[in-house]
Image (cartoon, rainbow, N blue to C red; front, side, top):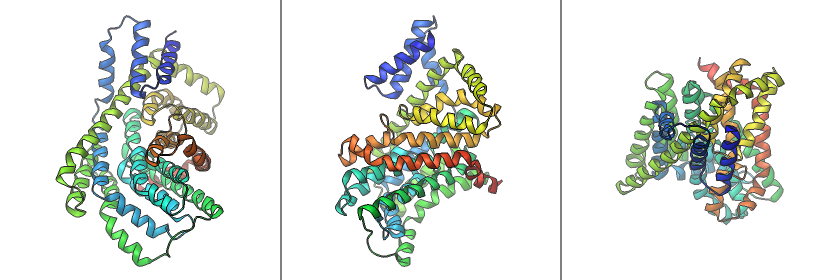
Length: 425
């Protein structure tokens, strides 16, 4: 009865277009009201408890770091560097989007921020160079998926906090999957561009590469500072996020000199709003997951999955299907908060490394960013490019299939994901 009311009310609330955080919190409220005699104050208490964590303090700081970098002229310099690297190849600007997306992902921690920043800089430029606007939108949306895979990743912070897994280890393990995803997207863009006759511009120039690298080197230092500080024992991931925010502000203001004093209130407000929305989703997802746990859904699901198979690979493939489906309907952070407590006991029982599983979970949900009906990156580029959502979705399919192929590779070869971590330890 409890589970039926919870799921039906959640579906109904989402069907009327309510935000995901509101849907999670409201359906939990309805369920508790109809099935228990608990005081409704429990809902606010559980939501607050979900975000009352030292690890979660990293989220607003990473948001702020990305906002400072974006406002400080970093996007333009990253695009210039990526253009110098691959702009001369067939489909040069499409390749630039993927490469720039990887670099910007290492600063923002968010697929939405990566998509918005690269899309604002590249879509009009691609159209002027002869690329169809819908294709440009698809390239940008797919390139934004690596935003939550390449560290620092806000979704990884959420998973690490819930699963009690080292956030630093998660960050290290995110590099190889994120880079492989970005390179795979480059391959798709190159193949499509060769078929469609989209040419690059200019020729490769070592001098230009060096010049553009020097321009953006201060921005590219940020992930080095974060991971170096964490693994050097200088600061915790939360403290690293605060350092990154200060570093982003100093670089934007005093190095690139494009961050004005008048921009700072807007940057702070933007980071605060984005953090508030994410934390509201996390709080709503926590109360949703708490009700599922009280209904013994994790126990029943674990028993069912172990009954179906004792093979870690088969289990991971089943989880991939589940996460890909969930990713079409739900924000990545909300999905992590709800599903991690449910799936983690099975993961541990089957001897799967929880750090590897966390990265695989994030990759799955990153792919969900370009799968309708809740493909956030698609909505963002549709708004920026002013193209119909359906047109962008159609053009994104080749990239989606390639990302699914890469997901299969990462699932069957966990050593790829864990390789960098093993080298460092």
